[in-house]
Image 1 (cartoon, rainbow, N blue to C red):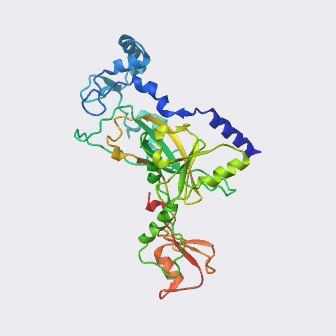
Image 2: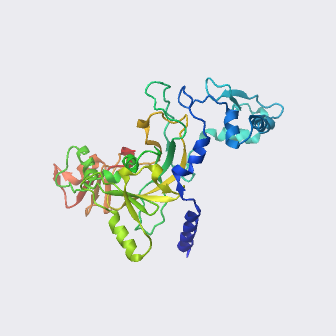
Image 3: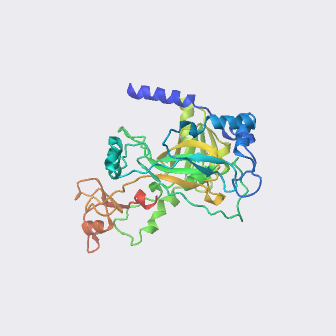
Length: 392
């Protein structure tokens, strides 16, 4: 009953979200944005009050009055820190009022118990994986130099898609699964779904598929591309449409069997398209709704478009910087089950000398335990294992 109720809630939640024709949805708001009147990227000759007045359909005088009524100075008390003026642009006359954060003092004469407790616990705070963003690893902010030559003549009407890619989902297990972030990717609206696929990094593309226990290669890197280059088929499923990767002649249509099965069960009508010919702006989608990326036969990733926004001055100014990985999920890595010190490089199965059917070894333990003078001990299978921390 619990799963049935959850399913009903999920369907009702997704049906309530709006199906967006993204390019058309933002067209009305795009017309309200001020054009870039020359100068550096992101600069505008109009004042902030003029922009707000146009967006709110009020006069500049009314916008100035609204700004005064909602000013942060209205919340200021006697003895508070004085705000400082923060200019939005170097050559702009507009500015915002900001306050500096009060520094924690080590003087205990203030008598504030909560502040004393905060100072005491300041160095003991650690991130918990149970927190909402506890499993995130944010990349450091990139500083893009203000170089005028070779800048693309973008304006603020360019759309940026924030896409969250989650670790593979096991649809055949009965155990409760917790979705874990793999990557958060930022893409431009005029880029193709194939660009998204090429940016997703999954260990299933690199793990070994051939038993090499009888002939262990010296160069493990040669095996890394074996699986990725062998099984090229994949698709992205968005709103009842399969977008297949048809860039390779050896591609196999993975969606055909799903469409045939759905037609026999009469559970929906699905269509097909090519991901290398479909731009993000051309796809109708819902914000926050889970979609699917499938590759390597049965490796399924949940995709969620968490946000769609306009390009701003904090983004890179060249198309070659997109798609870009904005964040990645935290991964502790899998250690060798023999020594527990080094990261695993090998997966051994069907070995009667081991207590587990699947055992992970580092390179040193793998050779010392399973081979004597280079000869195989017993009967087992060995596959190269690529840990997520090695590619993320």
